[in-house]
Amino acid sequence: MEIRIQMANLTLTDHERTNLRSHIRQRIEHAFGRIRKRIRHVDVFINDVNGPRGGPDKRCVIKVDTQGNEPVVAHGLDRNLFGLVNLLTTTAVRGTLKRVRRARDDAMIQKFDDAAVRAHDRLSSHTPDTSYDAYDVHKARGTWRVPRTTNVATDEAHIRAAMLPSTMRRSSD
Image 1: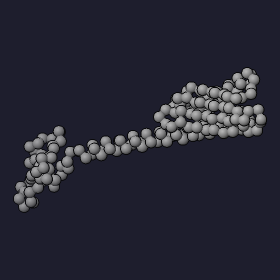
Image 2: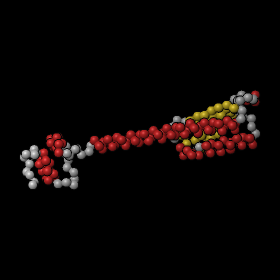
Image 3: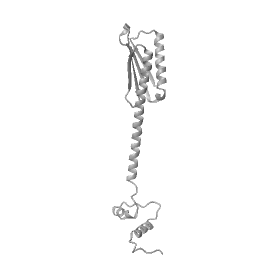
Image 4: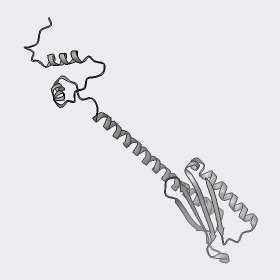
């Protein structure tokens, strides 16, 4: 995960600028720690909207670019940059987790759909019903398949014998 920080129009000393950059990095690394492998980069843009006049004029935009999803953007205005970064980082994490979960759920649904299609294909191309009633239908269609472990001659003889009316069967007693 790459963190890129850009600052513009801020009246900060070098020490304050360094402290702000380190705070942003620590906050983002901690907040995105669980999902850092899924994130390409995080862009942080900070600028002073109306210069030295004061007021809630510090704008911060945090953009999180995840792998395979649309970027998540959190933005806001405040006087306190540290509090604003904390708030927007939390917002960006929530949005990113939602997107990652949704993508993961979609992938799981797709995986189950693919498995269901494969199972349906496997079931629809299975060996036809080998019950005695279905023998003639399958034999006429040419779809009769004998299981590999059986003897073809004896199975067909048993099936034909079972299909004869009971008055025509040889009694085994």
